[in-house]
Image (cartoon, rainbow, N blue to C red; front, side, top):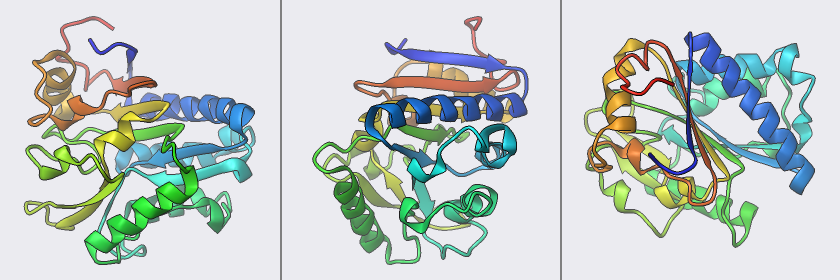
Length: 248
C-alpha cells in the first residue's frame, strides 16, 4: 500500500460527491488560513458534476470564501470552451457561473488552441501563478475503465513527461476529441492532496487492479499517482469497491 493512501468506501455515488465536497471545504479553509488562497484542479465527468452542484448549493457555498479560490483543471479536451464536451464548460455551468466566480480566479486550459500551443500556454500560466514551486493544494481525479486518469492513458508517451507541467496528448480511439491537454505526473505528484472519485460497478475490476494488483503504471496510469509530500484519498462507492479484497 502506498504510504499515506486512504481509501474511503461509501454507499452511493451521491455519498462520494458529498464527501468530495466536504474534502473541498476542509482543504480550502486550511489552505486559506495558511497561505491566503486555495489552488484546486478540477476534473470532468458525471461524479465531479454532482460535486460541482453540491458546492454551489447553500449547504457549502455559504461556508467558503470563493474570492480566495483559484480554479484549474487536471485535463481538457481540445474543443471550444462552449462545447458540451469541455470540462471547463461543465464546471462553468454547474459551479463557476452560479457562484459568480471572478474571471481572474479561473485558469482554464485553452482547448481551442492548437494542442501543443495550448499545452505551452497552460504550462506558462502554471509557472506564472505558482512561481518556482509548482504545487496545487488539491487535485481532483477520476478513474477510467482502462485505468487512465486525467488524460494519462495506458502506454502513452505522456507517462514519461517530466519537464513540463502540462502537455498535449493524442487519443486516437476517442471519438469526442482526439487531442487533449493534461497535467503530467510531476505536477500531479507535487500536490498537497489528490482526491480520486470512482463510482459504479463498471469501475470495480479496474479499481481492484489499481489498488490491490501488481504495480504497472504503464498499463494502469492511475497507479502512477503518488504524491511525494501530500495525501492521496480514494472516494469510492459500494459498487466500485465490490471487488476489493480488503475490507475498508
